[in-house]
Every structure is written in C-alpha cells, then in structure tokens.
Amino acid sequence: MEYTEFVLSDEFAVNFSSEILEDTSSDTTRVILAGEERVRSYLAPYGAESEEINFVCNHLEHISFFWSYHGGKKTLIAACKDQKDLYLRNLGVQVVDQLLMLKTKQVDIFVDKDIIVEKAKHFIQSALLWNYKFEMKTRGKTHLLSEFNFKFERPLTNEDLPELDFYKTAVFSTLMVRDMINTRANVATPEYMEKIIRHISSSTDKIPSFNVIQGKELEEQGLEIFYSVGKGAAIDPRLVHFVYKGNPDSEDIEYAIVGKGITFDAGGLNIKLKPEDMYCDKTGACTTAGILKGVIELELKINICFAFAIAENSVDANSYRPSDIYKSYKGLTVEIANTDSEGRLVLIDTFSYIQEQYNPKRIIDLATLTGTTMIALGDKANGLFTNDEEFAKAYITRGKEMHENSWILPIFEEHKQDMISDVSDLMNRGPDTKGHSSRAAAFMLNFINEGTSWLHVDYYGPAHLKSANPPHPKYATGFNTQTVLNLLRKHE
Ligand SMILES: [Zn+2]
Image 1 (cartoon, rainbow, N blue to C red):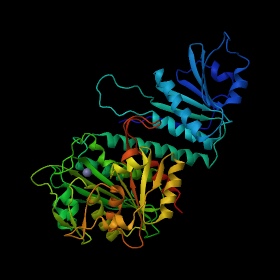
Image 2 (tube, protein in one colour):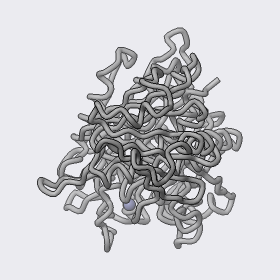
Image 3 (cartoon, rainbow, N blue to C red):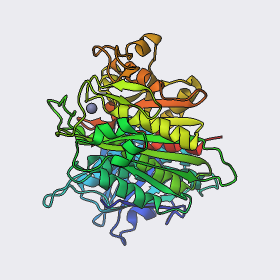
Image 4 (cartoon, rainbow, N blue to C red):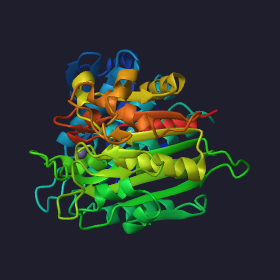
C-alpha cells in the first residue's frame, strides 16, 4: 500500500488573514485550524451573508466549521472552542471526513499561532490515522487524501520538531501494521512474514545478525512445542529473532518485544466453527514489525531484542493432536488439552529461547491470545498481565498519552493451579473456560525467569474492530504500535 505524504513546515505562507482566503492561485485545498476566538474575529468583517465570501457554517459540539468559497476556491476553517486533546482529536477526524466528501487529494493545513503545537499533534495523529482504508479492489476504490502539508504560524522549537516527527513515525508505523494484519493468509504466510521483517531490518546497520529457526530445525534445537503448532501447515513455522543494537556501548538488552504470529488459526484438530477472522491472529507479530520500523526510523539509542513466533495452525495428517504431550525448550512437559490454545505454546518456547540467548531485562509480548479479555474489557482496551506492576503502570501511562488504554488483570495462585495436568507438568488449557485469560497468563508465567520483568498484552478486542471507532477504522487498528514506541523512546 502507498502512504499519504506528510510534510511539516513552520513557514506560514501568509499570515492568518484574508490573504489565505483570497489567494486563489493554488489548486490545493486549504484548511485553517484555529481557536474559536481567532476565527470569529477574522470572520467578523465579512459577515455570513457577504457577497465577497460565502461562509457555510456547521456547528458541532466543541467544534465549528466554516467553509469559505472565494473565486471558486474552497477553504475549510476549523475552529476548536477549547484545546483539549480529545477535541483536537475529534477535529482531525471531522476535517478528514469533510475533505474526503470533497474528493480532495492534497491539503495544506495552516495551524494558527493560537493553537499550541503540543496540542496540534493530537489533530495530526487522528487525521492521519483516519485517512486509511484497506482494500484489494480493482474498481470503485475508496477515495483517500494523498498529501498533507502542515504549515505552522508559530515557529517550531527544537522540542516541537522531534515531537511532531515522533507522531508521524508512530502513525505511519501503525498504518503499516494495519496493512500487514489485514493481508489475508493466502498471501501473508509464515514465509511472507519473514520476508517483510527481513526487509524492514535491512534498512539499518544496527541489526548485526538476522536469525531464523525454521521447520524441523525448531524441533532439532529443542523448540518442540513451537514446532508442533505449525507442523500441520503447508509452509514451515519459524522463529525470527535478532537484536537491534541502538547502544553499542552497552551489552544490556533493555527490552525484548515478542509477537504472536499465527498467520491463520483454524484451531488445529480442535477446529474452530467460525475461523473467518483468524487471518488476524498474526496481529502481535505485525505490531512487533511496526515497532521495529519505528525504532529504526527514530534511531532509538537502546538495545532491543525482537522475536516473532510465526506459524499457521492448520489441519492435516501431521497436525499435533489434543492429548499429545511435548517437552518445552525449558524442559517442562506440556499436555495439549486443546490445539486451539496454540498462541501460548509458540510464545513459551520463544520466551525460553530468547532469555537464554539474550537475557533481556524486560519482555513485552503482544498477542491476540484470548477472546475472553474482550468480554471483560470490551474492544477498546488491552488486558495486561504482569509480574511487575510498576512496568505495567508505565505501559498504561505511555498508552494513555497515545490514546490507547490498558487495564491490569490478575494472575492468582488458583489460576496457576488450574494449569497443572494429571500426567505432565502443565496443560495448555484449563478444565473449563472460567478465568481463561488469567489462566493463559498463569501458564506462560512458568516460562519467565526469576528477575525478568514481563508484560503480556492480550488485545484481541482493540486489535480488530467490527465497526469503526474513529480514528480507528473497521478491521485492523494497529493498536499498541504507538504505545510501545512511546514507551521505548521515553526509556530512562
Ligand atoms: Zn487458537
């Protein structure tokens, strides 16, 4: 997919005055973003009935729109009564809707000097996120804006530019994640996933070695459980792992970002009745790929391990079976109570392997692991499970700053007990569906080393929407890409 061009400039072509409205020389549609008072004082001399300029007003709560038609040239004046983050965010969505209705391609957005740059970023974020549609149509394609050109009347400071640049990077990484998730499993196979990740990695020299353990090699190297999940599929499962070395002066790996990448989850022999949406079970790996893209572009100065647990959970004579017992990389034996609880299986071997190889201080795993987290929290928040509450709280704070919410859910001793099998150390699913999400987390906690901080992000709900929640569209949202990038850049 192609992405909208986004240009930032701090040279206001003309001051916020009649010159903008009366300049009909350029074909580019213009938007003026200003506080309500400034707009009123500006509009006053013309009056609503002015012959010279015809204003069409549209008042929404907290937001006013004025369309100015002058010499056949349209300018949208968007006024915000109060510079609250949420209002500017809503304004971004509304402005894009207005522009799309006009079939605008390019837009110059003039940000008036009374809009604080720190606040304008929320407008920019939501406008760019909302200007998105995934489609494979060859005819009747949805119209989208192809170029945003932001011009600030206020001179941009040394703090403003990197901040705006971060938002741009975080949003474009999110759009890439949406595309990757929305790509169907006939295209997005384990091989395709590896290819995309390899391509992103090749854009930096900070990744000294790119490693893949594939197919039978997984079993040979002791990742038997990982292999078992993907061995029924036509294309080999694989663990892709490497370190981004942003700080060559240190040996410490501050974070490991681990993504669950089930390219299609048919459920295995415990086959799903309705697997139609299960191309999005690779969301965690796609999100991790978007985070990688952002980290490279932002040139973050910390060392981060990236791991992608990629497999297709399919039905075949080679498929693993319910009741099979496998040995994990850590050595603990696991009975397969249900082949549809596969995400946790590829994740536990990945945890053990990367802890042995890289010894990261903290692990964040991103996984569309259980639908039951959505029953507790709805489709607009992550469920967090952790062994380090401070770490989880930092994640919540960094997420809120990017308008992505999370909530900590518990792992009780009872949840751990529920995952013990009669015949092996553990089983991959509890005796019934009660506390399903907490039990999954309790199961995985067995594979986190003492002293390693771990945060499990379970987010099937907000990852994939049944209807749009602006600025997120229907289907893949790219949720968590921005939160993790914000957390990593603010690492101290
Ligand atoms: Zn499953």
